[in-house]
Length: 446
Image 1: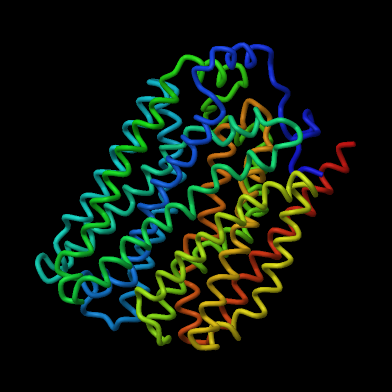
Image 2 (image 1 turned 45 degrees about the horizontal axis):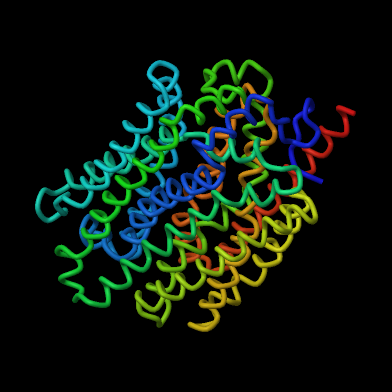
C-alpha cells in the first residue's frame, strides 16, 4: 500500500497526461537528467549545511564564542545553526512569489546566488577577537540568508519525478533525490577530516576552516548551471504545465483545506528527520567532548556511515515498491524507536559503541529518509502539490532536525545519553501517529 494518497488519486500518483508523453518524445529532458539535477541540487545544499554543522563543533566555539566554555560554545553555535531552518519557510514563500512573477529560472538564480554569497561571506568573516560581538551578528545574518536561499531554491523536481513514476517504481523514484543528503555529507566530512589531519589546531582556526566554505561556493555554481539547464528547457516547462505543478499562493493553500496535509506530511517524516542530525552533527560534538577518538577518526567513521546510508536509501526504493511506502515508513519508525532504547548504551560504550551508534544510525536513516519525500508530495492534489511539498519539507526540517543537535547535546551533557534516546523515540511516535491518522482519513473517505 502506498502512503498518503489524495482522495482523487488512490495511488497517490497522478495519471500521466498524453501531453506529458508528447513532451517526453522530444527527449530534451530525460528522466535521468531530472534525477541527476535532483541529486546535484540536493547534494550542493546539504554540503553547505553540513560544512556549517561540522564547523559548529570544530571551529565556531573557538573563533566566535571564545568567551564561553567549549560545551557552551558548541551549544551557542548549534543555536545559530538552527536559525536557517526557521528561515526556510520564509524563503519558500518569497521564492514562490518571485517565481509567479518572473519564472523559475530567475528564482533559482537569485536563491543560489544568495546561498553562495552567504557561504563565501562566512568564509571571509573575521572572528570575535577581531571585531567583537559584531562577528556573531554577522554569522547569524549569513546563516539566516542560507536558510532563506535554500527555501527559495525549491524547484519541484522531486514532485515531477514522483508524478511521472511508473506505478511499480514509485518507491524507487522517490528515493533518488534523497541520495543528495549522504553524498553532501560525505563530501563535507571528507574535506574537513583531511584539513584537520593536515593542519595544526592553530592553523585550522586561523585560516584552514575557511577552505570548505569556499569549496561550497564552487559547488553551488556547478549546481546552479545544472539546474538551470533543466528549468530553461521547453520540455521541462511543458511537463510542469501539463501536471499543473505551479507556485500557488500560500494563503490559497491554507484556505483550501489541504493546509492540514502540510502538518500531516511533516509529522509522518519526523522519525527520519529527528534521526538525521543525531547521526550526522551530534555524534561529532558528543564524541569530541566525552569520547576518546580524534575528530578526523570520528569524521571518517561518519563518512563510512554515510556510504552505508547511500546503499540503504537505494534499498528503501526496492522495499517501498515491494511492501508499500507506508508500510516501509512505519516499519522503519518502529526500528528507530527500538534503536532509541539502545542509544544510551551505545553512546556510553566507548569508541566501539559510539562507532556502532553512527553506523547503525546511518543505516536506519537511509532506510527511513529514502522514502520520506513521499510523505510530503503524494498527499496533495495537483494544484497544491508543488507548494505543499515545499512547505511540508520545511516544516519537517523545522520540527525534527533544526534543534536536534542543540537539544541532544544540552540534555545529554546534563542528564546523560538517555535524553538522546528519548528524543529519537518521540520522533518515531509522531511518525506512527501520523501514518495512523492518515490511514483513518483514507478509510473515512471510502
